[in-house]
Image (cartoon, rainbow over all chains, first blue to last red; front, side, top):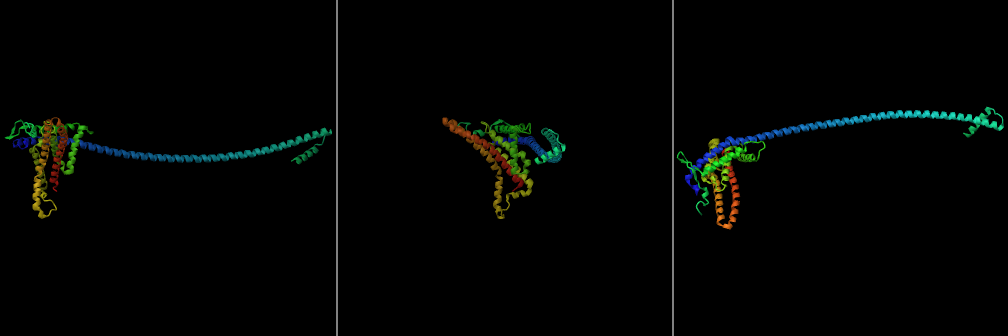
Length: 163
Length: 243
């Protein structure tokens, strides 16, 4: 069994020590610092980025809050503006309504008065015409003129009887 | 079996360049070649993988970082934050054993972790290092480690020798586990690979077995590197926290 050949032990031990020591130096001085530096850098970078992300998130949340607040304010002011407009509109309408109805009333009474007046005038005219017609009819029938007062009283009597 | 086809032939140390350092044989062998290759491969893998050190890692950089994080978490879970200074050593142990095991899976290659002298040297170094750390940190209090708390005094004569033996056997169990796994796996593969040719048409059966075994051996390569590392971490934890 070659493993038990003592004559080969010294060379194996010597080369083991040389190579292992060389590898240990490379590890200690070059490889391990490089790898740990790279890992540390990545870790700090990641932490930085995570912190930044958290900050941005906070900012975004604050912005959203402000936006919602302004939105609510705008909504409130819009509501009050609408209410104001409605109130003024209602009062204006009421005033115009009142004015209009007053105008209509006065016009109505005016026209009623004028109608009454016209009716009276017409009645008077009818009376005069009736008197004239009656006088003319009597003159034709009797061949003689009749006294105006007699005709007038007769027309009065006839009118009264008809009414 | 013919010469060179013995299942154990693959473990032979072949001198490539004879060398001597202070009268000791330090020849550059096939084992040394694979150790050097592993170290170069690990260095290139880690350093070139991180050459751009991108914020968003590519595929290669991700593998490098994952292996780093894997061992860093292993150390943190077993030892805690006090184990941090020992991370380069733990990572070196893991990568060295892992690449040694994986390079052994390449056909016609050599597995330096299949030699008890290599695994035992590493285990002994871990054992001595951990003991030095423990004594430096806890001074004489370290020896209370062999007397678990809450044990009645009359048990001490029985318990203390057991604890000492179990402590001293750590480098042996640590090294034998890795060495035996590698030795057994590679020998088994070689034996069954030998059957493929010997059985002719029926060689399909051992061939399929060898294919499955290759997958299993790659898993074991990772697993044993992991086990070696986690045990090193546990010993380090004992050294730093005693009980």
